[in-house]
Amino acid sequence: MKTVNIAIDGPAGAGKSTIAKMVSAEMGYIYVDTGAMYRAVALYLTENNIPDEDIEKYIGGVDVSLKFIDGVQRVYLGDRDVSELIRTPEISMAASRTSAIPAVRARLFDLQQKLARENNIIMDGRDIGTVVLPNADVKIFLTASAEERANRRYKELSEKPDCPPYEEILKDIIQRDYNDMNRETAPLKQAEDAVLVDTTELTLEQSAARITEIIKERI
Image 1 (spheres, one colour):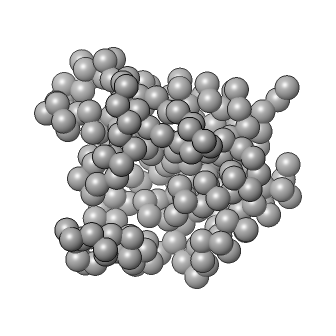
Image 2 (cartoon, rainbow, N blue to C red; image 1 turned 45 degrees about the vertical axis):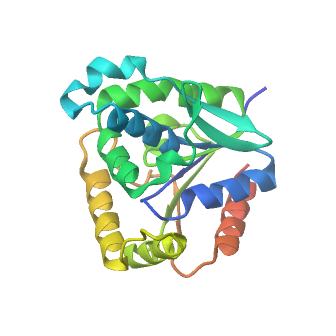
């Protein structure tokens, strides 16, 4: 039986993960957060003080897996649940850097494709529609202005005592956009057959409804 694969790409902070979770719940699909997988690798490299030039030597020992517990994706390094540890700004920036390394991408590529072959999935990331799932049934390129993405991130972090200022968050997002779009391996770009959805003026609920509508129209 053929599975249905939905690819959602876009820049950091566009709401891909949150919206993809909402849509997958609505449609009964499995949500695959590829960014979390790269963050887990970045956490491993950071915790073990492994420099970029040695990553290829160590990447084979990195055991990243996704487990779906009560319908919620949890991310594991070996037997350790790192779902919360991978969400810090430091790990976000490290993930942007390490995800450009071919050895890291190769390590995670097979796992991502296996999930897609065996399940109806919504997978989000930077290069899902262009590289990981080039034959996806539906491709979405989800974006929003850098200012709006920074504002959303600031609101998300504002209740924490170590919340960085808005200006710093905006600077980090602009830098991540540049890094993601200009890396040599699988740069962030809109697939030719992807539908562009700009959420700058939309709520999460409106964004999820729009994407659900696009998916149902095409499958």
